[in-house]
Length: 75
Image (cartoon, rainbow, N blue to C red):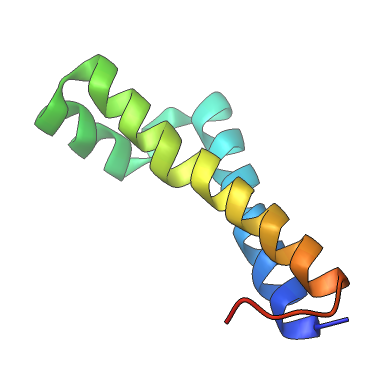
């Protein structure tokens, strides 16, 4: 087991889950979402925010956790 990779994975996973939760419960908290909506339009801003702040951290977190449990390091 590589505990550093697991810790990074858990952190990324928690960030993605928190952002998803905040977006569902109180989207007013997400200032970057508003900035992306203003810069790219409503639909494109929401899509870019979802990909960059929810999907990517969740995927990276899962990959890092699996890699860490297998005893390897991505870093």
